[in-house]
Amino acid sequence: MYTTEISTVLFNPANRVFEAMVTFHENGDILRIPCSLRFPIEATPSQVIPALIRQAKEKRKNDRAPLISRLSQMNFRNAA
Image (tube, rainbow, N blue to C red; front, side):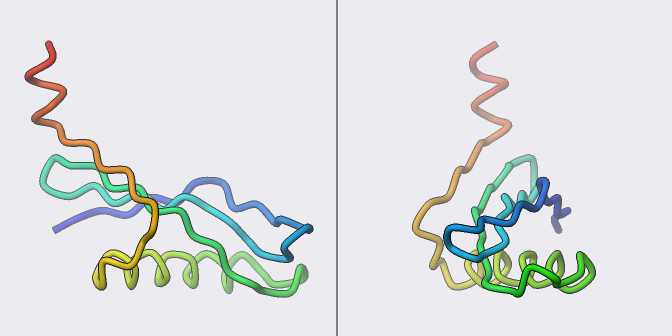
């Protein structure tokens, strides 16, 4: 089981994409996946945010994210 969190969603005008960092908290680990989707600038948050989360879940499921940050709570406990 995991919870999902999304960073501030930004529009990158150079690439005409919406970008955000999607974070999954699962079993004490933190998994961050950067996402970007091409949507028109007038797209609503209710369209963009679920699509970015779907993209992150798909990347996570298929192990297709070229850049993933994974932090283990176990590492934090051992460092203290």
